[in-house]
Length: 327
Ligand code: UDP
Image (cartoon, rainbow, N blue to C red; front, side, top):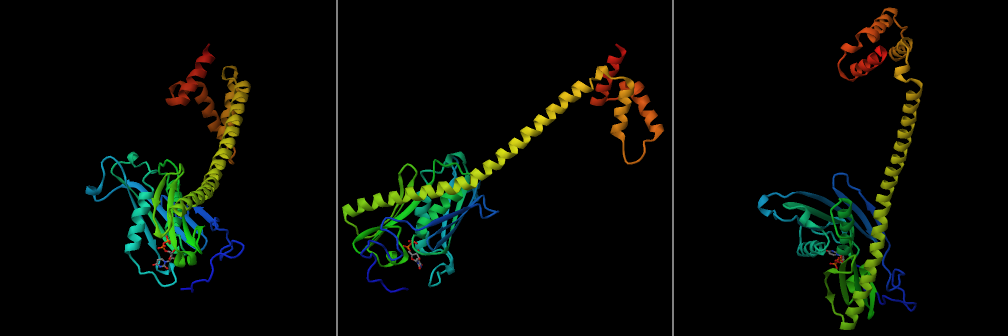
């Protein structure tokens, strides 16, 4: 582990990584990265790398665990063994069990579980690389993966931490700030500003706590914009494809309608002479082979004499043409 820095904030008010005290680390989001999950998201936030996958809603087994009036939501936060400097011990730990529980509860206000009685929605958040703020990063990724899975939700959840270093509050802690700072306050919020997760490690005065909440709320608002942008990019491009396909379909329908009008004008069945019918028939049966004269004659006879014996729509049309000829 790196040694404790002497100072976290320089004389210009900038932090060790050059950020202002109220600045979050750069975040990038990719949606739909896993083909076997119903929804997925790969998120990078500073040096954090998180993969979130959502499966469901699907029937929950064993059945005794089902809730008859709503879906249950399961959340598993896991740190890959290679995600931290000192190898993380594989399997659940007290820390990961606690993070899984509070993260699942963070989604309680938004997931419309009543739509899926007896079902389960599984959320997996895999930390591939950790650099402080992994629980909040995982929640941000899970929120997008849920949206990608099409789970009905009242909005998105955004999460961010505030801490205290050198006696000052700082937004979105870096690794050193997290390890050596005086406080760490991760929060998660709904789009309406309702806090759905709040944890605190360290000490803050009442005033600092209030200020920290404001800063974290502002951080969540910024993250919400990044999440919305990512979703727009994914689903707007999908909409564009659908729109352009609809345009092509409209053009085809228009062309077909024009063709039908032309056919109606040029080949009014009631006005057709027998020769016309024969000509059209030959054109239809034309192949690379020369038209067999006998076949041609057969068809002539068929159109003239046997049409009324044919069942189905062709016979019906032929019947009608025959009736018209008789008139
Ligand atoms: N960390 C680690 N090993 C662990 C747990 C955490 O190296 O077993 C590091 C990791 O970089 C993590 C940071 O310590 O992001 C802060 O951990 P914390 O428990 O505060 O959770 P987080 O801030 O990641 O939500």
